[in-house]
Image (cartoon, rainbow, N blue to C red; front, side):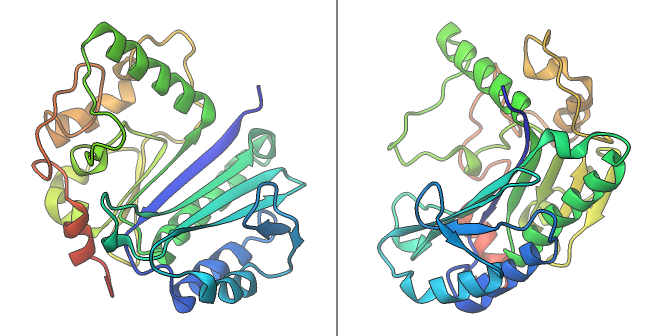
Length: 277
């Protein structure tokens, strides 16, 4: 099965404006070795582009309140893809649907001898995308870890040790806890304000962002998949996060819901911490 390094970034800032989309486009254009070659609202995208910024600015007037809008992205070498999901008016939707950017790069691009340098390129792109989106949360990790976590969650639900409300209930885990700990963990300014010094010793590296957030490197590199792991906390590097942030702050197989906004910020908290939100 193909392995990718996958990034996911969420924002409740007014990303649907041409100005905000242009800033995100410039961020993606600034890394030409990973910038998309084709974009469009269908998968696979068909429109060949030379500038993400131009594509997004031309797309912006089509984004109207009352609907969701997609831009798929793809490039051939290295194989990379992405999906930008924009909500016309976040706050008019019950439940709230944040803007979302997904980016995937084929794992083989990070092979030695260029691994360290290319991981820095990817991590810098991740950080700058979080900044340009004025995001509230982001994560990056191998797709193998994502699949394994999904298996752990399903097994815990079947065993009855983990209860998560069904889709469509209006309940959103992002307002109740963090969804595990990835290689790169971006926490927006509302998280930083809430947890403060508890974040200061986590991970192996911490990079502040221009919008008041923080990117935490949980491990020196993302290639930490353990096929024999049987639960999330079999990964020892995750345990300090659970200890520092407290019971209920991170989903695991025996997690109990502490309630909306009790241990993590709500979407309204993120909105208040967002420039122009």
